[in-house]
Image (cartoon, rainbow, N blue to C red):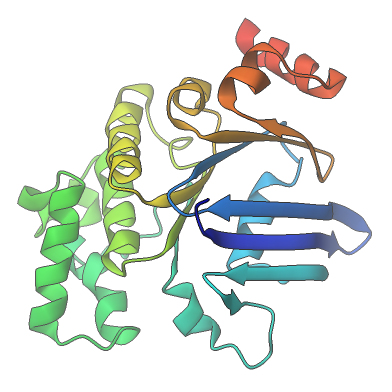
Length: 246
């Protein structure tokens, strides 16, 4: 049995009167690719953000790679090095090169020398197919290339788990494939990943497990074939039939 890397229990999140997460449990095993699907507003992105404490859970526990993220004694910046995060928007510094964006955290957070950071950064850019774009600024790159730089920035820190929050939704359709290709490669290399996305073809082909969320709870989970072809819950069936019509 693979070791559990992410263990979330009883996660609740309130934004004022809005109860966004209502007691979500999530286990992710080493090397597993878990896909989280569901309608807008179902709590998917909030769940991801609670897993690295970009959002503070209102209740519950989160343990990543043996570190209790909600323990007041936990150094959250140090802990976050184990949890790579890729967002919908690329969040790159426009005045820095691709390499500069990738190496910033290596130098500032991980304390690497510039030479060491540059070597790691170039290797990370090579992994996402952008070795020849190291000296380009974000403005000189396509959206798909910018997102791949953001992935390189995350993997350069050698995280134990990668969280992807709608990584392709801001991209033109023809650029989506290059980002999904990088995610496939990471998967093949054994990276543990939790992905929130509307790319159902990718979920069906690449995921080990699919979670369907609605109204702040996990309604159903299982292998992609079960969720997409034979869901047991009415809400899951309704959602799947709706997306398959598009």
